[in-house]
Image 1: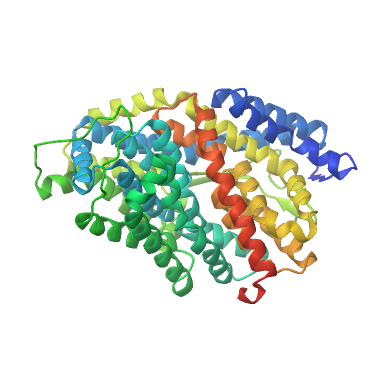
Image 2: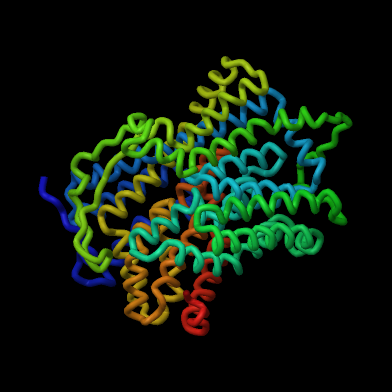
Length: 546
């Protein structure tokens, strides 16, 4: 089959082509916000629309377009849906064995204020998980924990998304930053420092923002000491780690510093008033648990955390590389009618490049498998029956049928947009804004994550273009490449993939539009602020660029 070259201006009128390129994106926004469609329906229709645009306007071969859609759907099933299934199974087992009740009460022993529970679990623990892994696992785990603590599902899911988004710049052991260096040829450690500088301003705002969403100015005034401790310690830990250690550990070390500091602080400080959502029962118990019982109850999450970190350590990943001891456990095959049959051309890339397409069935190295092993070990530790795990697994599969389909469709949307060149048309549209591009640079990364669901994918897609645009307007390419990453982290709040994962975790099947509207305002606020900060740094503080 002959290779097909991407076309970025299919109508020979760039503004008209850009308008056509926005059709799937605009429809998806409208489907969720105005039409209030269920996620699996909105996702399915949007994929069909995007495929039609790719075939009839971008002249993409039908077989190639369908192959891209199928490849995306498969990736949505593995490894993404696999993470959600295993995370929910682990949580449900802790509930059914009574261990989660002890977890709840141990958190309440620190604070029964739901604002501070959100701070500890959503912001501190969620940021830690984001640093260790990715692909929706942090949101799935923290949202289920918060839901179990009595949080309204919408707030459990929405606040988890907002809390864990910004640390995702260094998520999965810094992979997004690494990829930005690989595709641009710039040292990733330099990009890493620039990313941390913008995040240093944004991250301390997050605790105040999420508590403001929960309880307004009153909540902020009553909890500001704890918010300050959590935000500043995470920020300082992340900033120092990025400058003196590297891009792999900023989120992990910063979040650990924040989690420990905040927990110790809450041992000695309490807010004036206790906040709980309406229609939420106060959790009181006269039962006291020993330290051993508390450790036992937390053991599934301790084991989960340790295994997720192990799965992302370089030496463990090397086992699955070519020549590694576990290399054969990964089944990799090229996607027919797609692999190397799409050619990307300048200005999206430096020179004509074949777009590879393969599917990796990484049976052991997948993050979801680490959660599965954590579940198996936890069964032994808490002395639960295998039959309980088996019945719970099939129960979860049945419950998550629609969310899993939603995840598959939104990842398919990302793939057809990327392989058809539709995403690149939108990127080139922003690069036409001239000196204003410093403001729109993070927004491009934001859109990239909305389309792909991944900061890593957004960087792979747009960082080269960011660098080229920077040279045209005589701005540091490092600044704009870093802006793609920081803007992308904010886009995770509204990414259809993230929305689907969060809804699946808390049982909000069919209510994706509610969650999307909940996170949209927060995402817009932070990405606009990021654009302003990037412009200030580009034009008023150019000497700060390394």
